Image 1 (cartoon, rainbow, N blue to C red):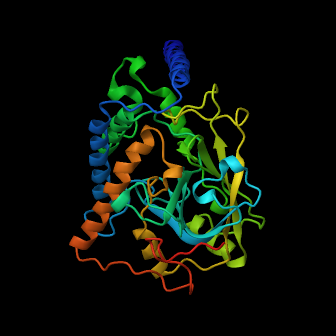
Image 2: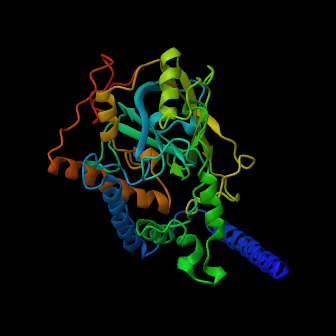
Image 3: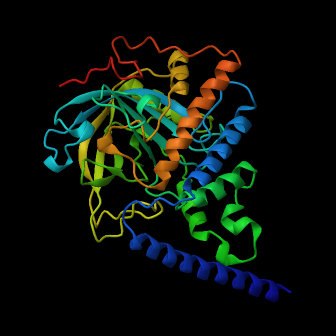
Length: 393
């Protein structure tokens, strides 16, 4: 009996390994075939499905009472003040959008978060996010009247790739997740046909669920998706920590120890990140429509474009935490020079916009007190239209 059981287990593992290898080969070939944007005719249908699933997740995680939290990255570890300074020696071909003027400094807000829908203990494996809102940017947002003219968002997580390739597959994943099945998508809804399984996606998804870092201020974050940088260059972004001071010692048995660490570390001194770009190179496996493929640094190394400085500060106040909860981010809070590219970004445009609308409307309908901008620090820009946030030349 034991011998038979071992043979069955070995056979199953062999089948799964072969399936994974076949999927990797197929997905790689698909990615190499086309390097630009390609919008499917069914994309609006699947986008509507994802929006519906996202709103269901918001309701489930909020228990029909305020605060209505985001469908993903609901747990904020804090919103901190920062400055973004364009490097003086930035290469001319990269001087577009917020990077147009070398030496220019912008005020910014940064929201650090965990990716899960639920507010779980920081010890749980999860993706961690860094969302940057640059203030005082000159030029209209691509969202038009729905956007925040004068702001530029950069949205990143601590993984270089996503785990789902396109909008149609994300809709299937989102529906099963909203229905309470965390693994259903990866096994084709329970079908025994392993060719319909998504083992490569499951591997990538597991890779994004990392153990908590020692400090969010010492972590590298990635854009996952591609963006324009001016009229002729496509890039991905990364924020690489350049913080010099040591990680603070905190009690990691506490549920919010990542926040505790930032409180302690920023209470002693500043942190910093290099905001970098990775240009797409023709002929290399650097697809726009497939965020599951990592752009290799051997094909195109990252180039530093700006320095992000997070000054010493106190950020864990009731007013600032409420302000943080009301902040909304979108890849399309952006100048045309940084236009988001690919299906995942097109999906985000709809989902993030409806997410923000829904959370704010439901909070208002239930009579919750609207947030007020934090009164401190004096003189820091709090106008989320960006109009009262002048950049420093």
